[in-house]
Each structure stands twice: as C-alpha cells, then as structure tokens.
Length: 532
Image (cartoon, rainbow, N blue to C red):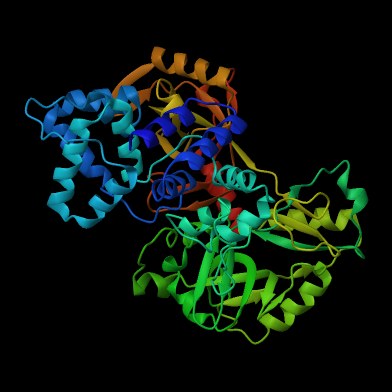
C-alpha cells in the first residue's frame, strides 16, 4: 500500500501527461502481481466494487472530531478524503499493525469481512497510516480516484510498455479484467496475447469533428455524404452473442444493468452502434426522461414500463463472425438496414438518412433540429466512403450542433469547488425573476470561465456575502451571468418549474444591472414554443 500511495502522490503532483505515463509505467514494471493489476484498475476506473462506503469514513471522522469543526474543515479543504486524511487523530491506544499491508492484501481483507469487520479494519489502517497513505486508501476504497489521468492515458501507457498500437490495447481492455494478470504476462513476454475471441468486448467508437463552416462545407456533397439527426440521448454500443448481451456507454462502461428491458429484447449475434433514448408509443422522450434511468443499478418494473428504452441504430460493426468495420459506410448502411428490419420496432429503429442537395438544405435541417425542443442536438454528416475506426479520423464524420440558447440570469448562491478549486467559490446557482419579483433558481454551472475570471468571481462573492446555509453561500443579487444551455424542460423537482440541459457560463455581465436580467416567463415561452 505504501508504494501505491507514493504512486498516487507522484501522479497527483505531476502536470505533464507524458510524465504521468512514464511514472505509471515505472510502477507497473516494478510492482508485483497482483498489486500492479489492482493499481491499474483503480487508476483506469475499472474497479467494480467499493471496499467501504464514503458515509462510513465520514461517520468515523465525526466520532473523533467535533462535527461542526469537521464541517468547517471540510468546507475549507473542499474534498472529503483529503479532509479526513489530514484531520484523522493519532489514537492514544491504537491497535497497531506489524506492517502496512500490500495493496492486494488490503483489497482481499476488506472483501472477506462483514460490516463490523470492515469498520474495525478501516480504523486499524487509518490509525497506522500517514496522511498521504490515508488519502490513497480513502480514494481507493470509495472508487473516487481523480488524479488527472484518463483511461485512455492509462491504455497508452500499456501500449508504450508493449510497443504496440493503442488500438491493440483498446481491443483487449474490455476482454480482460482486474487484476489483469494475463495482460501483464503478455506485456512481460511470458505468455501470448490474451484470447478474447469468445468474450463480448467494447470496441472504441468512431467520433466526429465539429464542422468548420468556412472550410469543411466545400468537401460535402449529396453524392459523397449522408446526413442524419444528432439525437440528444447517450451513445451506446450493443454487443451480443448466443450466450450474453452487453450495453456499453461511449466510454466503455457496462450499463446493461440499468436497461434490462433492452437486454431482454436483444435476439442477435452482432455489435451495433447507436443512440439510447426513451420512446413511448413511437414518441421520443427528452433527455430528462432518459436521465431517470441512467445509473440505476436495479430499476423498478414501474420505471421500466413508464420509460422504456429504445435504440436508434447508426452503424453495425460486426454481424456473426463477420467484421464489418473495414467496409465503407455505404455498405455498412445497407447491412444495417437489413439487420434492423426484423427487430422489435419498439426497441430498435434505423437512423433516418436526411435528403439534401445544397448547403442551404443542411442549414434548414439544422434549424429544424433546433426547433424540436432539445430532442435533437443538430446534424451528423458522414462520408459514405469512411470505414469504421476508433477516434476522430479527419474529414470522415462531422457534427453540426445547434447554437445554444442564451439567457441572462442572476447569481444567487455559490459553493467552493473540489480539488484544485477547493479554495475558490466556483460552483454557481443562478435564477430568473418571477412575476411577483422573486428570484427563482433555474440551474447550476461550474465552468465556462477562465482561471482569471474565477479569481475575480471569488473576490466578488467574498465581498457580497449574505446568509450561509451549510456549505452554500448566499450572495447579494447583483451579478448577472449570460448562461448558455442546449435545451430546457419543465421539471417538478425545481422550484422554478424548469430544468436546463447542459448549462454553462457564456459571459459574466459585470456591466448589466440585475433588474434587467431575463424573466422566468422568457424561459417558459421558450419551452412552450418548442412544444408547438
């Protein structure tokens, strides 16, 4: 565990991605099995279990420190694990460990214990550890590791260690599992490449470039490209064979458990790429509908019946034992048509190809997408000769998103951020004026501004404080944000009655009086207009 803690410390305080990969590679070459495999899973985000719950760590801390003092400390530090790691008191009569266990020993011990045993073991470890070691344990135990290293960077580290293309590791990644001993035996030249031919795995998806209107339109023509709607759902890949079905998110996370109705409807041996949405009686639901089913470990039957899952298929990567990715899109599209035709239309449909002749036609289609109340984000424009490859190949696929909506809203509340932003008020709640003069919250945002603007905002908030509600700081209702968002829907969960999709700060309107910010009625008219 000491080596793992040192690794996290080195990675956390290193900014360069290349340097992080070098540090990780050095650790993976020298650490023993299975420690290095569990470390790889923790950093790569593939651990599938918690060693203990965050609430247990919080409870243990408040048993050892005045809860009010802990709350103030947490608010100042801005991150739970770091607060506990720093504030954990040295016990007067600790149950000392002879030595600090290895990473794999700790994982095995937690997984073998019951609820009370987990509590006792966590106390033993925290008593025996230094603050950096406690932080590493707490982040590992709750799967909350954030050290500025993406899963792709982790895979690139492995590819460089083995001197193979990144795509080779991408193909293997979801066919092997922690603690990755067969993967490391191959990397160390002690065994052949793992055989994943019988396993359902995720294939890295093909992505689109945002269109450059000035440059890219000259490459687009109706005989060489096809246009499709860009729906506002989530990108998924469904992989199935005779014995198993998996639904992967765009990042490669297995989300099958959240959509058992879709899994049950799969009756094929293939891999298809598409957009996951909610569809009732042929009507596509909003992203808010879909959000009610995301991240549900075991959705209720009532929720599944109320919000049935549906996939609009974009592409087909494999059918049976035939790999279709090297084929041009035009041929894959014909194969996809034939494939989708016999499927349950309540669960699967074919992405519609939109006819166009001129760039003006594409502009009109994009405007039509903008008028759908947020159901569509814009257009996808794809080269018919493109084969299916991971990443963003140049000039193959384009996305032309609708322009965001803009409203001037008033800052109401602020909270401190986490990690490197823990010293700044960086999370903002903003609202619009109701007819009775009340300011009602419509959303939160924590990005869209520069580091310099963050410092200016933090200073303004500290100089304009009003009441405090736990970690939330109320401010004087004087500062206006120009807020950008993709769409808006009615919502019973918010006092204003509305929820924004993907809100972000577009501009800080230092010059605009708060009284001139938008009215809630302006948002209501936007939602009503898009319904009609």
